[in-house]
Amino acid sequence: MSKSSVSNRRIILAGANPGLRLFDEHGKVTAYASIWMVDWSIRGPGTAVVLWFDGIVRVVSEDVDLASWLERYFVRSFLEVQGLPWHEPAVERDLVQVSMNLADGLSAKAADIQIEMSGVLDRRLFATDNFQLAEGNHSLSLVIAPVRSATVSIGGASVPGFVQVDGSPAKPGSSAFLTTAEVWRR
Image (tube, rainbow, N blue to C red; front, top):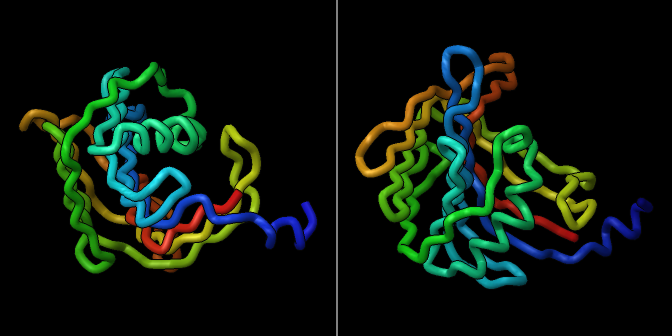
């Protein structure tokens, strides 16, 4: 793709999409969560949580149309969900509350789902013009903050698993991360 066609891409979403994968002691994914705080999109603003656990996909939001689009258009294409048994989601209309900052972490509540992330390891810019989604190639820029720990509970019961932290002291990585200033262009 030429530089001019990349620069002509239009914004389709602006907001934040923190996420996490928890693993068992054998390296198998036990849970995946994608938390959305959409300031603006071609489908409107809103918050949503997409959770995969035990082979079940749940999508929770007050705006089920927006949440369904986020799950289908974005989340299904993310590398983090590749290989997970991804069935048609149960879409639930419910309040989603998210509190996040890049100093302390994140707390999110959606229906009976509670997600906590803490221990920010770093903050850095990420940008690409080659992010593949189901609808083709997209541009993405964001500030990412990998975190040391994350928990998910459903109905008060903790989901098993832990965050995998890797990388180097200069550029730590994690299977759980916060994002902000996230812009998707098509």
